[in-house]
Length: 365
Image 1: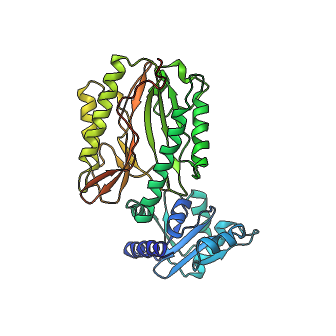
Image 2: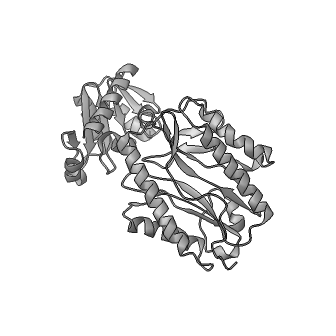
Image 3: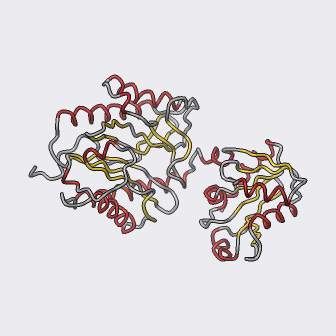
């Protein structure tokens, strides 16, 4: 529990610097980060003089197991959460209340304001998310476990591929294998795209058969307990054409250039530019239409972002994806994605699956 208490202490200091008496945390993921509680429908009121978790009777036992020692305010079923939060805020004598602008609805804000006419509301953005930018040792350990789960599941699925399997069947099998190896499930709905459908960066798996194309793009990840991973590989399921060989080589070179640029102090936009330059020089600049990468952890998309106009510097402890891609309508697409930890003197690639252009998964072809 000590690391959760340290996180709340750090947040309380940030709240004080804002001039607020407390922050009402309404983002359930942020509540988990600050307390270790894995349920939902619960808020956290935290500040220099207050620290209380607001929840309901469904979670009383779970809260006792996951958050021992944390003050709880358990509402009765007849009391709605907004009214309960108002009561707790009154009891804590809060005059200036910071609220999470990105997660608090207008309805909740208006309900609280009606109950708390003498309270000044201070919308803030990113207060907890900025703490989540830097992963601690336990978070990195669980992310490593999530990467290992994803790789184990992929290895089993790849070894058992058959031409008649569909995109949907492969996505379901990835989920099954992740759970079989002890994971909580997929980090997000897997992307499995055969042939021309690989030109869709977020393709939804269909009943299309993988034997009907020359390549299949698979973007998947695992959740260990709470933390996630995110990987992409392209498998050859037919003939390796000169076009596929060229585009794959461009994307792989772009990814390697970007990884080589990652170290503390480097601007996020400069890492993106290292990959984007390679792709543009090869003539595919307009076919790389997304940022190079993103942070992940409790959520699959978190800060930071490796993208143009992101001028913040990288810091040790950040965990990011690096996933350049080239997408050609009616032909297909290539994306190669790995997970990286920014270290004190560079970076560590956390994923270890081969990524050189593979031979066809069916040797007889």
